[in-house]
Image (tube, rainbow, N blue to C red; front, side, top):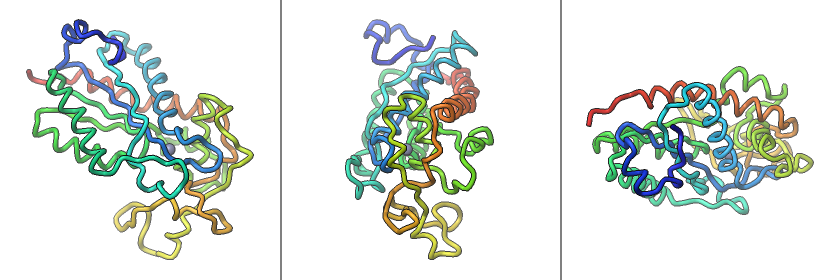
Length: 264
Ligand SMILES: [Zn+2]
């Protein structure tokens, strides 16, 4: 059965098969997403993804045991701190916080933890923690929330809208699928990786990279805008497709984790 971690009583938690039940922990962020989308975009997407995942998991395998942890509203957003409203843990604090959560769960007998990463900046810490926790007998899985490279998701992006990722058409659409009133498309401006244009062999990721900060992303006029892509073509309908496809991509992985038996 799929249940909300925070809704269980102590007695219900004591009765749960904690070793075999995965806890899925959604990791959001509170950071600028351009002029048009809210600061809580990643946490709003995390909540929407959880709703869609629960719906699809219940359709596929209603008996699957899973606990959904509350969404973390703040994450590691140091790359966005130059823009108004962005809030971040320091890298040290964020790692320690995630580790403390894992060790608390371990103390109560949980062995399978799934971080649902809904902000790319959170991912590197989860990957390191996953390795460290193996030594503690914990299986920490990392799932990324948006299936942005899936062809069905790529098909939603307007043509000529290159570089779409943070705060672009896809993320803005996902927020619109939750509540169109949270998005102000009339204020949207497109962003490009202007700083990296000076390099031929160094990208924002890949085998030779310089990690980006939000100031690197500028409008055509050179104004720092902090987003990648052009949100102008975003819509509620596109967001619904992206949320549905992104959940479809993750459901088989989640069920595989549910069925994976840890030795007790
Ligand atoms: Zn985001």
